[in-house]
Amino acid sequence: MKSRRVALVGLGIGRQHAAAYRALAGRFEIAAVCARSEVSARKAANDFGAQHALTNFDDVLQLPNIDIIDLCTPPHLHVEQALAALHTGHHVICEKPVAADVADIDRLAAAEAACGRWLMPIFQYRFGAGLGTLLDLQARGLTGDPLLATVEVHWRRRADYYHVPWRGRIETELGGVLTSQAVHAIDALTCAFGNVRRVAAFAATAINPVEVEDNAVVSLQMCNGALVTISATLGSGAEITRHRFVFRNLVAESNTRPYSNCEGPWTFTSDDVEHATTLRQALAEIEAVRGNFSAAATENKAVNAAVNANEASMLNGYTPPVGFEPQMRAFADALDMEQPPPVTIMDARRSVMLLSAIYDSVRSGEIIELPRLNL
View 1 (cartoon, helix red, strand yellow):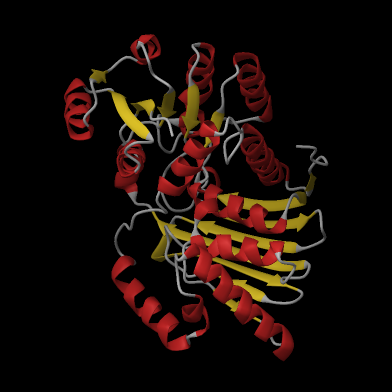
View 2 (spheres, rainbow, N blue to C red):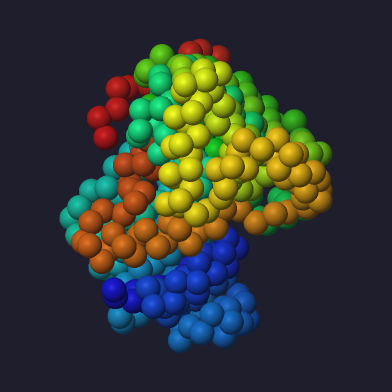
């Protein structure tokens, strides 16, 4: 296994990326840190054991022996920075949203192909143990057809959140609650339910005096015929994120932790006695392989009640998002095997296409039909 040298650009969410790299010592080395403030860059470089502390992105591009440039910068910078990094021979990891429109995604895909390097978008919720168990059950043929789902992203953002100059502005944040907060929950939805056929959406700016939406509802018809509702707000005094998937053979429901609901425990319920027995056996097998959360806990109401009670302490504060370590480890594995990353530029394209359709529906008041995806 080879260790890759990483240049980390941006120290907001970048600090959590750094924690993942440090947990994967031997697979990654943080060789450089770039931030707007020289003081911040030097302190972070010292904290992370990085050799270089920089304040200019162009200087990052010129560093020798850097394998990966990790972009944790404001969204409006992503496309041009990613293009520059690819063209200078680097793999790229990029926070969401990678771009505002499909045309820019296609520019990045073309650069990726021309340069022989990979761009991996960050969609860390895909690697949560709860969602992973659902996908395993699907692969085993135990869920049946998808029928209906509900997704709730009910968080709180007050005025101080928008003191960061690029937040709350369409030009720099590229979108509001749907793009910046709900995007991972929406991605998790499409992982389980597939591609979207039609969109109808309403959105408003109701919580804070900003340019972007902070309150939204979305209705989706999936290509497989399933129906979905999404509600997203930044005005909820009790923060939760929840996925509830109704399949023909079972119901899957996440926990409600606002920033880590795709982790366990999840509940999986079947009302058919024979199928429930098969389901229990499958969950036990998955638990034995994953070891990430207890399949028994998914059926234990007392355990679930205790988990819900423990969440009360999180509702008024910030809890860490799903960790980045699983996605970074999977990327290292892919690079070792000279295979595409676990999340690709085409995954970002699918996400951007859906968000664009949602915003088109908000602006026009019409139902928007998405093109058939051939990704």
